[in-house]
Amino acid sequence: MSVPQLFPIGCQHPDPDALSIVLDIVGSQAEGTRDVGPWRSGTFATLAEHGVLAGFLPSDCEGTAATETAIMEFLIELGGRCLTTALALTQWASGCRIIAEAETDVRQQFLPALARGDLSTTVGISQLTTSRRHLGRAVMEASTVDGQWLLDGLCPWVTGADSVDTVVTGAATPSGDTLFFVVEREASGVTVDPPMQMLALTGSRTSAVHFDAAATTAVIEPSATRRPAAGGLTTSALAVGAAQASARLLAREASRREDLGPSAAGLAEEAAGLADRVLQGVREGMEPTERDQLRGEANSLVIRAAQAGLVASKGAGFVAGHPAERAIREAMFFLVWSCPQTVSTATLCELVAI
Image (cartoon, rainbow, N blue to C red):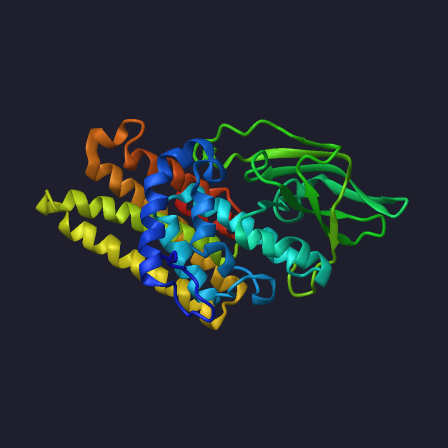
């Protein structure tokens, strides 16, 4: 019997049967994923088997080219089942989008294997967007020796750095241009730090990766329409998904305590409305200022929703391992992950009541 595929070719929305199966499996594996990551828990294999990975990729590279709306609908649901997996998938997808800008031979070298799950990748480009930009010089530099591009420098934040086969990163060239590169994790000159022990999402196995004259496998010139930037709608989608998980927790508590009913209904309604706005932004486009405003609202929602879940769970929710305790920690992630300065400033003003 064939395995239900989440993103059949030409689909406008995730297949409902496949969606239910995938979310159930991801949920059942979530505890292990939060410990060892989706690469080792088997979750990424599940995504590949059910056509999730193929949906992100073009049809000429064994992908099924799902619409952005269909992908975002799935990411919202995934963010509410396992935020660790959702984060890892977005970093995989970011790397794939960059590779998809490459010449045909590079695309064919990597993308079909990535669609099947035979090859894994991640992205390390925070040094080009938000991290360490204040230093006044390139954190990652590229140079050529005998026609081979070599990398020197640091990727400070790389999800799954010790678990993937390749890292897609960006570096400044001597001419001042920025190029992207695919680098094998085990290439000479590549050193991966131990995974960071973070407030939450330690299972994402996020590490710093050091490059010392590291040889690259492929070079990609960035498209003029695909420059790295922080604060896209994907991050808001995951925040909304996490908020919906907290809303479901509050609803479960409300099923036993009538006094919580209005709060549970109000939170669920707000989360659903914000999810609709994210999807509308994907369908119709959104100006950067509107996108940042939406991100700020999503941040506020996911934090308030987690707090509401803790209040409703009382003392039990304050114990390590409880869903409310985990939701509180995971909500903090959105204050620092790919957060544009305008959003950070607005958040600070809200927190200190300016």
